[in-house]
Length: 360
Image 1 (cartoon, rainbow, N blue to C red):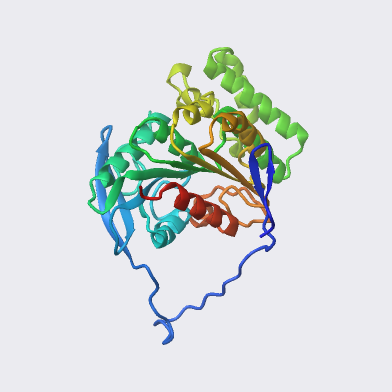
Image 2 (image 1 turned 180 degrees about the vertical axis):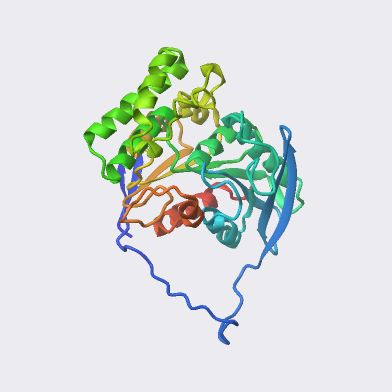
């Protein structure tokens, strides 16, 4: 790994090796030379409730040890259950550092009841807080050393959860935009359409349609104008890549729109309200999040607070993967399999957690 550079308070990491390659062989039985590794990870089902939902997850912990620090995982938008590969490095590897990890199914998914309909960010963050309180009662866990981890939307939720409870000890945010959701989606859709081969005219029409649709939801544009823009765009081959409503499905009352409640929220308000150590990690090759803008939004606050760290890892994707052939795929099969690969990410995360969760 090359020496890191610090620019305006932001650590820029570069990695000299493109990847580690492992060849797998399928065998009916383990080879004779295989031995069990340490530590042995034990699993325990955890059930808890919040806001009308019965939530279920798995607590992963080393087989031995007490007063363990712990992490509650909050979900990215597309990875709603504990079986996603995105969470595997936490549940399988962090116990080796002496951590317990709770990964639960998001409300309305997997074994958890409830629904996402009408659910806002605050309620999702509060689900994570309920999970924190559930494992704080476990005799093997130190209730004063429990924090949150999340990637993408989950990274924003981890900060929000830390700002809404006095019981969190830290929060880790990976690939979470520190700009409004509206700005993040504009950035992502522009990149997605360009990557799919659409030209400037298509991108301009998509941007104009998004602006007119969102202006209607804000109450600054007429419903007729929003419908006109959406109707003209929805039959274009690129429309399914824009994450917009169709004209037929446009909210009859913009005040009931869940996107209206989310699109202009300033994530920096939660950062300012979370008075615990915060770690932000970004990939320098992330087409989903305006990383430069997000890091810049944090810089002035970092000058006043010394418990915030920001790292940008060069050449790494949104999911912390070594991915030189970015496709921005968001189908379920892709989301199920994507997972962190960057050695720099693992080193930064492990080092920071070790420093900020030491027992006193």
